Every structure is written in structure tokens, then in C-alpha cells.
Length: 442
Image (cartoon, rainbow, N blue to C red):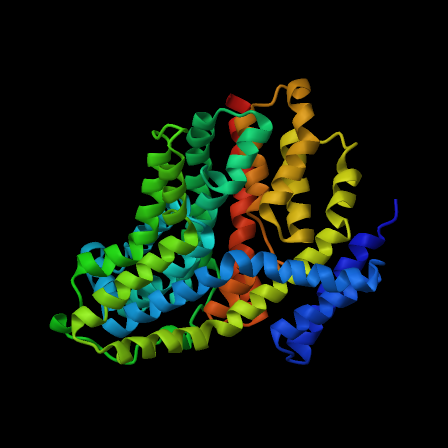
């Protein structure tokens, strides 16, 4: 079987790194040029390359554009009103600088379980940066802790789309997935969120310009802790409440179900939070609508390039998927005699690296190794967690989450590989090890 499909993707990634790191070409332009190059090398008809790029940008930004914009606006309003400083100073006072990392770990797990990763990241990032400033600690240290917790929760636990799809595909008991998932998640996030930052050396980086708080607020100038926390938590509260309510509403009440799904969507719940923030952090604090809209506009200006880079990343991912590289890897591994749990993890990792699509990678791997479960007497819940751990692995330039982390925190590609890459790799490897240990006793 020819290795050319994988070789051409590797050439494309190398080309992208050279454009960005050697020639300092903007990430968006470099990604688009790389997408075209890989499409040509893989033998795609030229007219299909343009269509794939269009579908990739539309697919990723159709879901993420407003979430990213609303998240940036919410963060900017919190910074400019003193709400972020209030949350940071209160948490520091309650937990102390030494223990605040553990508080962020718990909050990250809750947010990662309750909402899409991108929403959780954009809500928590300004809080983490404010806490880091107050604690006089590098924001990347706390940022790694937060991302480790949110990505792990997002990857392992229903009702997030990836693990939910895996539970259905492998006929696993969702209760056992939760029980074993907790056993897998705890050591995983401690390794990647607490231990890893201590091993990465100097993590001092400039505060991202969007969230660089120039003004220091007095106690009277800041909103209350309750208001400062409840407004950014609004999407999590709405999404969680809707998820629970839908469990008890009869299927014949279609109007009620439709309304709940509407307000419980990531975009609408974020919009509600932004509207609340405009009043709670602006108008009700004595600011004019013009002052509030100034923060609103600055946030959009600062985050616009992030949106376009993520869109271009979606184009690159779509090109790779449309060339069938994922199917090639799946076919290559189908006849292997490795343990089904290790194979499920390894196939998912390879597919995630090749395509940047976590859920697609995990479901594809589940389809390959699922039939082996009965032959090898593998617990379906552990198979779900093996695939889920594989999807939560080292990713690179074809993954929107990679670019979100890089651009929002203002990092170089080198620093992004060092931080994001290593924390995700740690998540994945530790997750697999715990799954394998569990398979010995269950």
C-alpha cells in the first residue's frame, strides 16, 4: 500500500511551518497556501480544491465564529469593568496563591463537562489571566491547568458530542463510562495540569493585548463577586439546565423542546451572556452605551484575526479529509493484531493528527475495533475511554483548538507546540495508561 497520502500531508505541514516560522507569513495565508498545495499533491481536481476550502471555512466558522466573538466581547467587558479583577482577587483571597491552581482545575472540569470546549476556553481564559496577574504568576501556568481540565472533560464525558457518539457506537453503559471516566480523568489532569507546568521551565509571556488590564480598580468600582461570576457562567447554567430539562419533557411537547434547544445552543446562550454583561458590567455601572460599545468594538477588532486563522485551519482540515487520508490510515490498521484498546487509541491518535477532527477520529477507530470487543472480551466503557483518550491528544496546525490557544494567548508556533502540544500528549498517554490498568481489574 502506497504511503504517498500520508507523505503529502507531512510535506504540507512542513511547508506550513517553513512559511510561518522562517518567512513569517501570516497564519491564515500560510494555511490557505498549504491547503492548496496538499490538495494538488494528493491529486484532487482543481475545482474541488476550491470547494473543499469553502466547505472547510464555512463548516468551522459556521459553528465557532459567533462563539469566539461573543467570548472575546464577554472577556473584554469583564476586564474593562473590573469584574475579572473581582473574581481573581476573591478566589485568591479564599484559596491563596498556592492552591488557586487546584480551584482552576475543578472549575475547568465543570466547564468542560457543561459546554463545548471553545466556549469554556473563551469564558475561562480572561478569568485565568486576571487570577495570574493578581497572584503574580505566569498566566500560561494557570492557562495550561485550565485547558488540561476542560479538554479532558470535553473528551471523556457525555453529553459532549464525541463521547456521546462513542457510547452509542459501542453500545456502552453510559453510567460506567462516567464512573471509569472519573478514574481516568483525575490522574490525567493532575499530570497535565499540575505536574507538567512545573516541568516546562520559564512560562513568563506578555499578557495578551486584548486582556491586558491597564486600570487597577478599587473595591467600590468593581461589580460584586456574585455578579462578576454569574454573568460569565450564564452559558454553562443555561446549557446544563436545558440538558437536564430535556430529559423530563415528553417528546410530544415539540414547541417547548424546540425553544429549549434554541436557548440552549452555544451561540444563543453566549449571546444572552453578552447582553447581560452589557448591562451588568456597563450600563448598570454608570457607563454610557457608547463606552460599552467601545469595549465591544475593540474586542471584535482584536479577535478578528483569530477567527480568520481558525477558518483557514478548517480549510486545511477539510482538504485532508476530502483526500481520504483518514480512510487510508483506517484501512492500514484494520488487520493489526495489537490489543483492541491500544489499537483503538493508536488509530484515533493517527487520525486526529492527520485530520484534526477529534470526534470523527474516535468514531472511525470505534468502527474498526468495535467488532473485536467480543473476541477479546473488552469492556465497552473502557473502549469508549480508549478512543476518547486518543482523540484528546497532541494536535497541530490542522486543528482549530490549536490556533485558538496560540492566537488568544499570543504565542509563537514553537511555544504553542511546547505548551498545548505537550499538555494534550500528556492527557492522551496518561489516559491510555489508566484505561489499560483498569482493563486488568474490570
